[in-house]
Length: 490
Length: 64
Image (cartoon, rainbow over all chains, first blue to last red; front, side, top):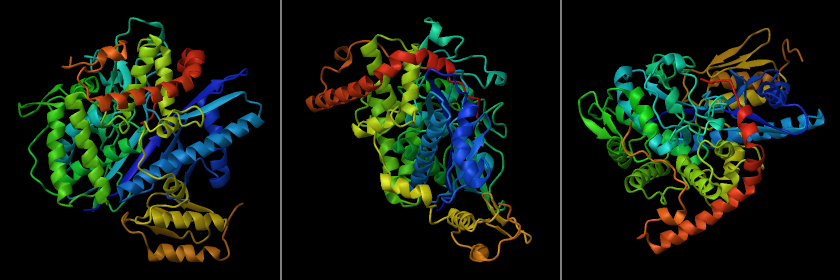
């Protein structure tokens, strides 16, 4: 079984002020993207490694990995995105200093800001069009509601679940609102699994920012629409550790494999997934009881164990889509260990591999040392530092160096992925075209499916098969790049 | 309200450590606590100096 994976990451921007004036996110984003615009004459470009880099709604720098058909490639491409962002940040910092700006820009791979605005991570998984989409989402949804127990980023959230679940409030959720939390010692907060859960308002729909669904059903396959559909999962948190990313995407892909392999699965549909997702986020014990449509009652641990045992059998039979048996084995192993850890309450077996567990260790220890409460702004600042990619300010590099955060992808593999696309998908063609067209100083346009030269001939190639790493028409287009350019305007 | 809420308490480590934890695990926990402390020491000045202002100003626009 084969599958295409992609990860989109929306990064946050912050500024630590010096003596001078404060720079807003829009100004910092302009500095960040100055080299991008110089390179590609746009703040929305495809890179030689096949990825898309752009400024999204709300001045979020966003990096969308190239299509990968092997999970380790996805981890490398995702980590390459962080490396590219850190490089842009260093250049922005230098440009700001040259302009006399006194302060430090921060780039953060997190999921919520101080006002409760939510952003972060989207997972793309290609599925066959022949699958019944309603069946597929009904099997996948209960898993996505509970997956946060394994791969949530960890977040300080209000203890109480908003009982008034009106979609109109969907964009505001986190506790550290400037109007309330830091100055209100009476706020009752807990350390939970994910802040994202409180801004989810539907199971499946095509809305995005107004009434966010767990699965976005907008049907843009970026491939042959008769064969494929792209599943767009927007419930997940951005992950700092590669081990968390691997389990996050790998476990979801294995559940899709179960569905697509036609394995009989009993109906685990939840009676109220939007209520459940909020309760699950506040329960670190896995004992929250879920009510199923069938009338059955299962704890979060029991539900995740059912999916795990099915996935384990699939992997044992070699019938999975992760493209790497070693990666599949790691996914099953960590999935097993986190459920055992939650069951026993002893997290020492997973405390370097999962974001919410690592962050909880930092928060707990800080509370012990400082006598601060969870509503203390220093806790929010610590949470931010966990996700900060800024060299010298972020904690992850120090955690890795101290053996407190695990890695999967060797650093030289990440460096290679900054320049090189995945070799086994359509991204290999796109990457070659972008590199060659740029070197030949040709005016070109690229998207996920098309390569086009903007000259008199307007030659274009359509790449409808994301699994095909070569294409004769694309080869011809690339081979012709050295010929006399057309109406190129630089 | 869900079952089994867990709230982080500001109790000392000694109070929450299971009495019968294996010696090796305790030793490992001790090593980890020292390593965590070292990292927290590194950013302590950041957390102490401008946390409130920093947090107040960290506002983005929402994404998808």
